Length: 272
Image (cartoon, rainbow, N blue to C red):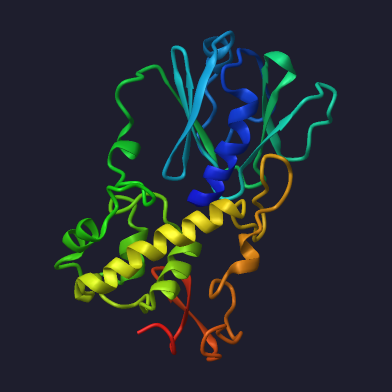
């Protein structure tokens, strides 16, 4: 599933080509994604200017003059921009937005778990966005904040930092990588971790996410950037997907366990 770095990479790839452009037409070949694309979308969005593209956690927010479209990439969704109207549709490509100056936004999603949410209320966020925690790369996500939120919590620290109401956008890959960098075992109860170790974790989350964004995200299977290239952070993964491989720091074998149904990777030598 695309996580924060992949969604931010997508936003940065789309913005220069589409922001400030008028949407001239919409083609839809498959409406049935996780939620059906509204039948009225074409009429309501056509001729509006796309003012900006924002990101909140793992969501993209397309802000038009009189509406906002919230997009989630699901498990395998990807946006790209093309210039040629005659460019053939790809398998699993579900819709195209045609902008002035020949910019065409295409959406590709083999598993169809992504969705579009059209809203005309520009002032109030839907509940699934309003309840999100702070952005992990913002100043609001701090040691003091994480310390206060974690007191009395017995859940594993990995689950805690993946709770979107605690911090927005941290998924499985980057939770594993940040915990390795902070030298914290993923099964440790959140409430038993002291302030100093939480400070290391906050720094690690920020560092791992920043590095992943700089590398264009992580491509393991489906994710591609808007220009068709993969994300290169996969080459820098220390523990995720490396079970039975040696740790780059201590040479002990990377272990894989399952926490709440998710594969979790860690080094027993480095992470306590």
